[in-house]
Length: 368
Length: 246
Image 1 (spheres, rainbow over the protein chains, first blue to last red):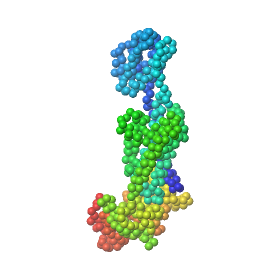
Image 2: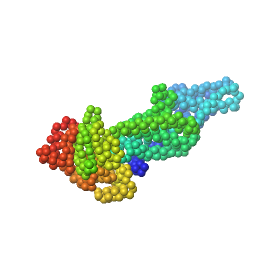
Image 3: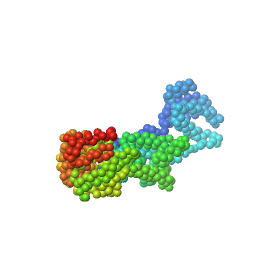
Image 4: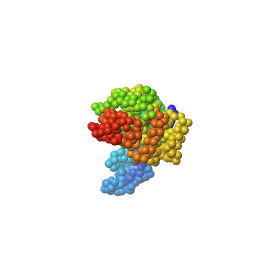
């Protein structure tokens, strides 16, 4: 045990003396949270729109005023001709155009139904869909307000309620994703590199010749990263709550416990890679290309897994981040307990066990 | 037999069809400096790795300090020290931290470690360097430190794998003084080398060619037997017949 502590202390020296490692370790989570939380959101704000108001009556002006006051739109200008709309789209100045036909108010008052035309730039379909939804909800709001003042026929207004994330904030899906990503990077890459480095510099041989048990070498490599990753999780959570105003609805101890499990999964994966590779470069390439990309693609935080073709859906099952993402969303955002996530927890535990056993097995073979 | 610390009996290591070491047999006595010579690829490192427990032999027997290399690797590990070609110390740790780490993993107690590291620093005259990172030390210092660390836990045998690679002759000479001093304390030194002048410093040497030991005796006797002026000549006569050349 004393030997173990000696070893762990040495590992801390390695980590703490290496500025670059430290920067990656602690700078990256902060950066990622800031980038994903603020810059890279799915919300589309301040989209430029042109409005062709041919009606110029009270109703149309009220509607335009609503759009102007929305944070999602910024009225580029009001125009008078169809051709100007085309020009504005072609110039790439606007994302959307709204046409209010002449007699808008009349039609509303007398026919109880009026038409508006929405034209969206669908070269980016996601943005177009989002913007169309925004416009629809603004029009809907306006309409239901009108219904209060005038005697209108019965009308069914569908009301959608967004569960768990009423404002459809993108941080809700980003934060769990970023947590999965960062822990994957830190734990897998850092442990893999630190073990392979000992192979490269030849110190691993010295350690193997010493009475210090090989599996303790591996274990003591993992301890500092476990601790540092834990600090990372806490940082991410604190930033999410205070900076991004993301609530933690579930039990915090459970959240931390599953995070530790995921850290251990990643560590064992890192150990596995380090045993299979001989150079730091190989270890880094495998961790980055082999882990980072699948984590971004298949964890479900950027691209919904449900929309993927079946073979890719199957592949996504072997990505640990996918399961962690599900767990974190369930616990943090939906506030669910262990009963809801035990299956995912078991899968992660199984993966950990697999990597550890496979790693230890080939470690012994290598010794022979 | 307590004076024989290494007994190798027909020790063989095969990698597929390739026989890296072919039935090598030899004995090494306590306190001896045993030179293990051979061209690149002759099988020196493989043989040494088997003796250190880094590699499992394909056939043959061997005991280290009376312990069997198949079954008693744990006991052997406590009895041996090892220094590789790369003078493996941690470059981002200070001199003192390296000493404490390597002493620590051999299970030396705090008091013992403190005394030993003071002695070691005294002996190497590195008072001013204890807090320096190893990366900042000149190669010669690193090497001496690596050797001192390898014998810190008072092993019965220390294995040195080409310990003086890339070092100037003066530093090599100083390094050999450390080896002699360890041998005088009763530590058996098993050393592989490329440098034939170093071979002359050894009590006995063996020369490996193509996985086999072709000669084994004191440097003086070998020179006589081969009618050669130097070990270099002896080596050249033997190695000329080698088929494996890198």
